Image (cartoon, rainbow, N blue to C red; front, side, top):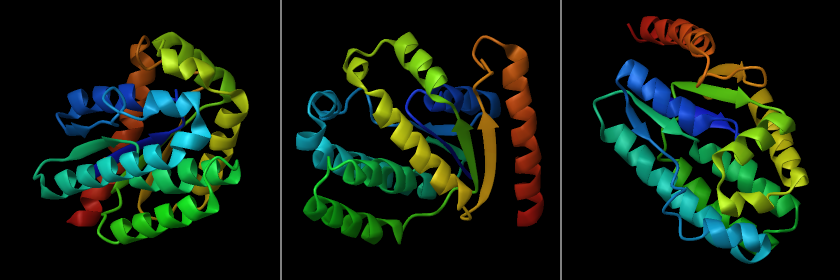
Length: 208
């Protein structure tokens, strides 16, 4: 099966994906952040580097999907290719940080790729309000993320809610993480696992 974790910057996607991969003995595909050649420049000058960053993420995510398709094991992915287009690129375009020309070019590339992409069997969406996101971002202490503006996070959250409200490509599990700490609190993590087990049982039954 193909499981994916979706959510805004600082929602806890990567941490949860890693914990779930260990819990279920799944393969994991993580977002290209630490070795991303554009990310730091992007946060310094979004308008200049937005197209470069989005194309880099798009290509990286598509390569991950190819790996997932070929793997005989269940794989969990940290963010989906759909978020790249429907959330981040769309937000940059709406905010006039991605030109109309570049946005059309990007969407053309995305539409060509997505025809060959398998949608997740289960999408786990981590819903988090701005105070939670800011707290998590500050806690992990990435220097280049210090310049992230609140209105940028708010706009991303709105795009996420709009996308999730219409999501119909597979099973969807929404986890409100505002009052959860699934790293420090065993009960919080166990509660998420219990809800995932229900979804996995449904997936398994539907495949028989």
